[in-house]
Length: 473
Image (cartoon, rainbow, N blue to C red):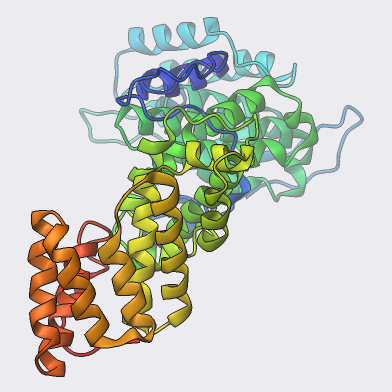
């Protein structure tokens, strides 16, 4: 896979990602929510899972046989390495194919331009290996096998160590991804592999790029992202590889894909197996918000309103509350004329701020945490002052939960019920009537009211609010 194709494929697959040189002009469509964002990739990459191997994995049973020998003057080992690969796999052709197919495949691979970054010795080694593989299949029945007689080809090859990078590069090109990764993991710690480790790691990184491309083509952004992240780590592990343009292209693609991967990981089921991915996505979201609120030039999300609302709809109330210091945000927001407040409103619009308010009410109410209700009150006051919205019911709920009692709630709701909209009147009159009855009826209606108020924020997370038992702070 070519280096430039990485970011082109990602951008073409994710149509709403803008070319890197295009700047935000304030008139971009809502249907195109994201621009690339330079998120610190440590937040996501550090939590990328290595690809899990199945019970029959080649890694578990890989039999790499190494013949020990002293190092010669040119820095190469004279020993051999045996890998569990047949000749057909090297050429990427089916077992038992015709001799013409063997010759054609070998010629095509000999004419193929090798990827940039390999050591100069890899190309001549590839030519020698391809001739050797071709001749084995044409003239040595042990290696070609016999389909008609049900005789399988020899299942392993003994190669000089200097041919191993050539074999891995060919296997990578013909799509034998699993074999390349398994061989690389098995041999990279071998002392004899040290002179060839640059090319071994490069083959593994290019294989991860191929896995990433397939993930993007199938629409699984997180699979492609994590494969690119593994390729990044492989290239960074060797100083000579860190200088390659390939690494720069991979990191550019990771920056573009990070917000999309973030949303995809937040959308995954909340299971123990996805816990680390979710934790990484939350950390990345906090970092992205920090960059946006501080106005860093490296962070250029196209439509903050759409992106953040998508993200917050995938969060639990407790996750929303822990996302930012919302009470501090509320105080800054009150100062309409400050540049900090203006930047904040660009990143966190009124709707997202209101979702944070509801999350504080829901979590504070269910967990009996008065400090969250206090923060909800500050957010309410800030929204009413800066957005010219009437949050009378939300304000009264905070007031009641902080200890003003049922009577005050009843009176205030009666006043609001006369002037509020139809939905508010329905809720207000219901809670007001129950406030004058017994505690059970009052708390049942209060719980129902808060549940209805919050039902579009983390619906699965807030189902506990439908319980009619008292949860009062």
